[in-house]
Length: 350
Image 1 (cartoon, rainbow, N blue to C red):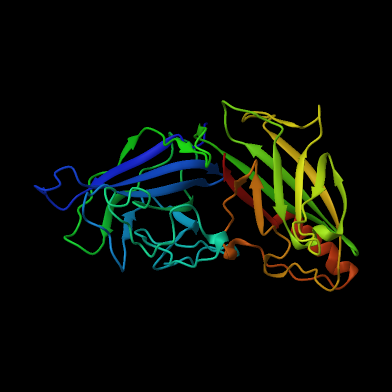
Image 2: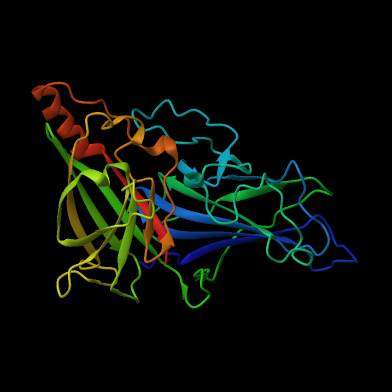
């Protein structure tokens, strides 16, 4: 199943406008990857009105789920209410409401909570007056949902609220998949790379991470791929298996950035999606007791780039909170917890 192969589209308009008869606001809902219990979608709103801006306090978007879907996490936006998530234990969804309402994040939002075209406080300019700033976007991870094109269900009863005359949304319909253009404007793709960072083992003086890079593109492989990772413990990297490694130190006193790439003739080719469409490595770090902790997501990267493209990072509340070990018994229990739960996936449009 190819990533980014479904789009839901609706056009919203208040009434016929003699000065702008074709003006509308179009929403695209692109499924860009599948998860064990649902999917990740990129939602993009385009203001195709010629002279009407969406002004402060900005847009709010609502819909009704077709079944019992929940929102696990969001990047670039948030729901106004969490709803009743009492049936979930441990990992709590971002929103459990049958009819969520989503608003844009504000300017100044931390970079790891942003995607392109987000975080403008819901303000969108008209496409004629500002063709570089007429869109707003966010990413949503949907659970308790279909996991294929045949089983996923279209949300319904979309509503759009914004300053102005008012908008009425038409029904959602399946459209052609969106083509994502790379930053250099030289290539168009419809798939993603997923980078899986798994805190695997915890020793007394060391800790071990397993990194898996998965290609979801059925039509393309990647030769001479590379990945850049920022993490404060790279200064204490002891050993790396099956990847090449070079520290990147633009500031000589700080060694927190590493460039990783495949071993020639072994895994320097990342195959297209399928059983062979991934490469893996393990990294062994020595603990610096003055800084090492499993609390507040410290064990996970601050930033990841794949082939120079900036990966979408999970929101802060998605990072596991784990206690620091204090004894041999606690360490063995923590190892089990880490092996089961401490992993995160990072995504890059490439």
